Length: 175
Image (cartoon, rainbow, N blue to C red; front, side, top):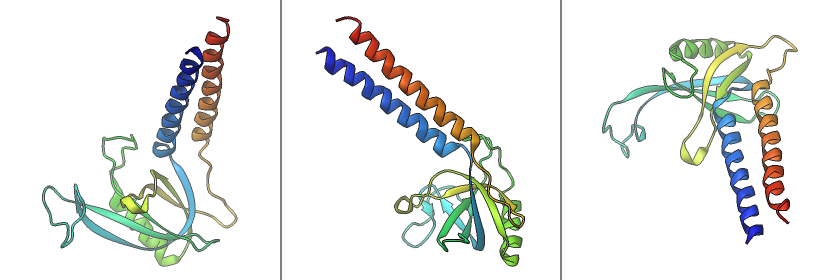
């Protein structure tokens, strides 16, 4: 019975750490090096983009979308460009129209840019990464690295290792 409880507690610790790592991966900024190829604006409500199959049934808002292409692999990606306002995660972004104007300028000049974003791209849920900022990359310059995320990943790996050792110590010392 003790072995089952020990492995159950380790499984709980693993689950907790997976959730924490997922939260950091979603909410902390990441960076992509890309070329902007186009953009559009869609009117959406709580159910997603408004269309014949999804008529407006509540308050609506405009959401900007930015279409990009990776310069090396030619893989395309769509980003959402929406204000976070005062909500979670705390980016306090109120300038999505200005970011969209910058994206349009970069698209016209076909410049390589760094996109700072948060979130995940899940195509079957129609979920896109949200752009926080766009910056032009100089010739030979590479994208930034998400160092705070790396620090948190290392911290969570350490706390998982220590929590497993603690649980093992509780059960092994009682023998």
